[in-house]
Image (cartoon, rainbow, N blue to C red; front, side):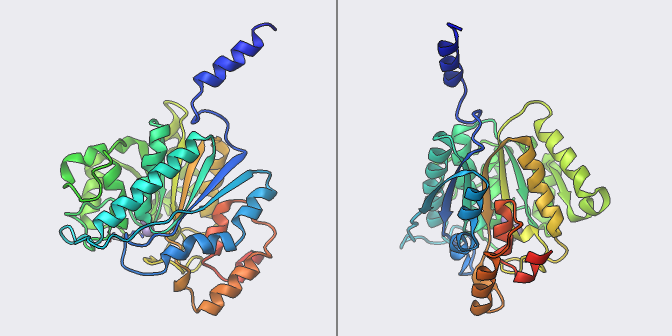
Length: 339
Ligand SMILES: NC(=[NH2+])NCCC[C@H](N)C(=O)O
Ligand SMILES: [Mn+2]
Ligand SMILES: [Mn+2]
């Protein structure tokens, strides 16, 4: 009995904020940023997801939700292209700011949900997470691999290059992009799994194969089923040791019939149940530490009126369980509530 006080203090001391049970405290961080690609509107993603009822729903599930509001990003005046990459310094600076915010939230003991914004924001989100949890693993749910380097990228857009900035294994293939000197790549190719791929550029395909990255394309999901895909994913990442999970969820992983309001939709995506099953299995590990919900662009809905009325109807849905559903529903009409 006498040991109880000191022992529990010792345990608290030796457990990092990554290893503590954070499941009941959630930080929401809005990142209204769109300069990682060329279409306007994705900066309204955080508002669309909040308006769909994210915070209320999480609170109803007994999570203590701390909404830290939206970060304020600056568009830098002097920001010339680097090669054919637009806004490198603006994107670099935004990610530096986001990295600090995510690191702070995780360090304070929260599970963090980052609402984008375009997918270039995963650079700062994963980097900030890794500052607190250097042994994290990354599950990237997306139609795209977002692993182009500035040299392989067909578009130049940084939202299609985020993973290349994170990977140690690509260090010697990456030029020095202005705006990113604050960070060094830290992630190993074996600590990453993709789910939902169906639009991969030729250079990306070579990188995936050369580095032996574990990925599940839509065809793999057709063949194996989502249940087996999740078994292999979690085994690949967690068999050696239990560690914090970073889930980076690009809403375009869903089929465009479910989530049309996104900048680079690709046919043949995840069904509603497949997408939710991925998040349920991750939830069941108890290891989710940070989640990005990105590429929700409400201005790409049918009409602004339709988007508005969708949001109000969405708030009437009663059966939604996970925060991801809000993001998807922010891009989808009301009929889905009935499914
Ligand atoms: N996060 C996204 N939606 N990325 C789309 C990337 C599309 C294409 N592969 C590119 O690099 O430009
Ligand atoms: Mn995508
Ligand atoms: Mn993406």
